[in-house]
Length: 265
Image (cartoon, rainbow, N blue to C red; front, side):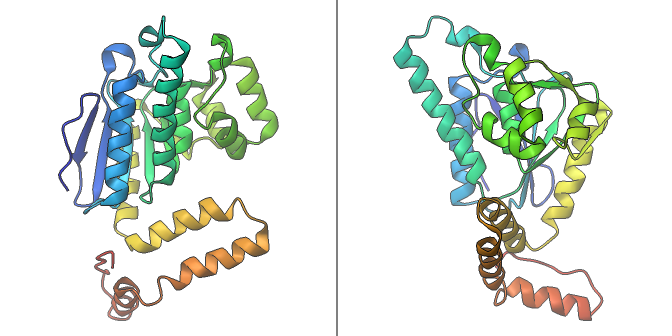
């Protein structure tokens, strides 16, 4: 698919079905400003409406030490209440669009992720991280609180008690602790994080794309239901796949002892 040239983001197809997105403001720690909010919202919206050949996304940051430092506080300095709220409403739409994206998103966290940068990581489906990086939700040290899912996604990832500690102290944790707590699926040397994420994305992209999207939907919405209702939701998601071309192809390929060629229909 054809994507516009964004001011704050780089986009590159690194495989036939894998899109690499790079947060590209390394001179300011890849901090999230208004333009980046608009760029992300446009990108997530386009990929939701028409993903084209994209079956999996990897999200990383430019540079070697910082994934995203959070909101751009220099831009925010001196903002009126109305300006602040208008900007945050843009950020809210951007994060919700990421959360609702049907395509799986893997975060390749190449460096530190703080505040809104860490909330971005938590909004992805799962993540790999640099073993040299640190992570925090620092909003409480600035007189605000997380407002892009931090107080909701973090407890769901690590449990309420650990999440309250991070949220209320604003103190960073290292990669090893983040791994032990379940925030990351794996940590690696800084240079190995992106290749690891791309390799996983390629594996996902090789599977039936409709199946992957239904799994993402079932996990997300089912987790919000009581168990019996969630089971019903899962079966409804499953039933949508029975008559797809890819289901027929998958079974046929298995019986013919060859690799399935999925077309997403």
